[in-house]
Image 1 (cartoon, rainbow, N blue to C red):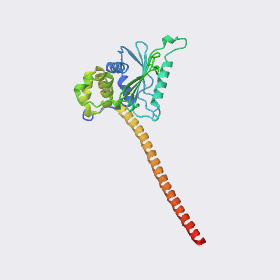
Image 2 (image 1 turned 30 degrees about the vertical axis):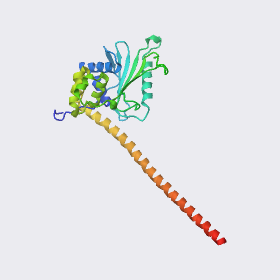
Image 3 (image 1 turned 30 degrees about the horizontal axis):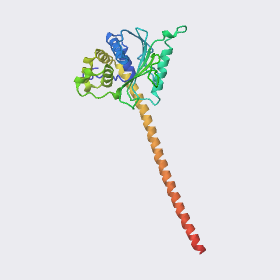
Image 4 (image 1 turned 180 degrees about the vertical axis):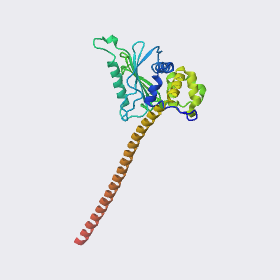
Length: 287
């Protein structure tokens, strides 16, 4: 790929998102620790990634999971995923299920309850999950509904909603942004060449983002990854096209049903008019 034609892979696709943080390089490992520190809100000193599949595989049914499963130095567990496309199901329920499954897999037979680690299910969402407020970062855990008292604090779900990240017009404002917002903005624009000045400002303000950008540029040189990205985007385009086609067919049927209803109503009114005229003639004939 020549410099003139150089493009950046879309980091909002799960396969590319995972690749940024799972390369065998210092930059990739540093970026992962930086992202986790921002998402969770505490310093991560060491993190070990547990492989769950070959990132070069591709399944036309999108059955492969591109989650990043990792363990920290204190046995805290985290599962990170990117959801690049909005789904028809309740994503909150799905996230709770995966968090619970992560927790249940972290304890062995014979372990006592004190050995249960803190777990985090972290989802970066390229769609709005909760439209009731403008906050892009949410951390959910088990608390008392009345007084907010925390239960054990070991089961955590974090949502980072990219579309809620505000536009940044002044590059000087970047350094004052919270780290999670910086990461969200980077993932939102990393493949947009017209936003390079803002990308550079984000990288200067956050070393982990600088390492992530470097890694993303590196994997963008891999022609195979572009083939996979094209396949994923093609499948999603097919899915959306099918949904839109069904909507058009449903609307066509609705219009046709409405036309039939109107015609039926016209016939009913005409039948009533004729019945009144027949009744009127009958009365006149009886006179």
